[in-house]
Length: 199
Image (cartoon, rainbow, N blue to C red; front, top):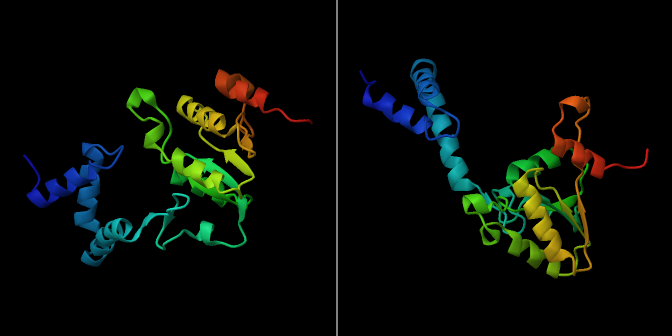
């Protein structure tokens, strides 16, 4: 026996979200029906609409913004000679929450992944090269994820920029604080070894 159509429609829409199956969708739909007021449901629905209607990506760096240019690119106190390159906006927010980095960013919107049909032209590498060509950039910091795709992307960008006068660095990868060496995978240990510093 199916739920009434409005509930089935809501279940189907929840199931469109990543990682949410039928049972979770049913639980969420029944929560909306049983526990949310009409005003709360309207606010919930409006938040979806506002995200799609009022947000867009910054034409310079790819960050999320409600304005023509994002707050980071628009900030005169940010160091425009440093560009931190990351795979997605979520990574940018993780790095920004640390409150230590004072440069600007470049969001690639993905990583090179030939097995899934994502090539160089599918991510924002050309836009990064244009930013570097303008002559004000002194350092490009590669902050791609420590995955095969992230490594491939970082190496490709490094190859493209090697002929320029720009300093190319990357964030260190390795063992987490409090981590146990015996539980770490080989790639993590290798990255920790490669990123060693004077003690």
